[in-house]
Image (cartoon, rainbow, N blue to C red):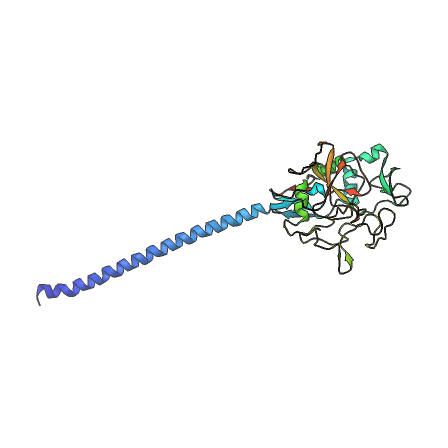
Length: 320
């Protein structure tokens, strides 16, 4: 056997070994790259989960979380002060499921000794159903919405006869605040641009059942109370919206944080008065042919120190 014939099998074996080694190196390199990629993806996924958790903090009891985002505020071809409709972006926030109740307000009063402005004034505004006129009733207050000659307020009804100042004082005590007007409409719409006129949908009466406590009959001389109530109703009596809120139309008007003004681009002229605050939601006194203000875009104003038997509030809080 020659030297060359002896080396050939060994050389071939070495070549095969070298090629297999290179293949193994490539496979190992590929595996390492895949492991690194998987690690990076895992870290990214964990970060996303962490961010999501931060963006959706724990919801306080009795509130609903809204993640915020872009929404259309206002409406065209409705009441003039609702126009023009415009797009805006809302930050995350919390909103009370229901208006603050008489029972809730009682706890605030007991804890702080607070007196409402109506109590300090000694009277407040009530509508006389016999005459259809607004009157000042002595000793009408959150305890006795129609005056002391009538029954006391029910614990599970929305508190009334609270001024903007009273509502704000309660919100501060509770560690919250009044919702902005934009937040209120965003919540009423459930954060969606559905085009529905009401917070619960498109019809006031669904399958023969009223979805809100509003006026039926001839306003202001006859309320047939087809919805079951002449005055306020228990919060939540007419169900929840898809977002989980109650009483976002009818029952009582609700204070918001904002000074009343016209939307930018509205051609009407209005001298801004810092004492006038935006109220939303309509009330049990609202009739479609008169104020029709239980729609999601409807807005009115009220003096910050004034109170009445159809005006309440709910609170909100920052969501971040």
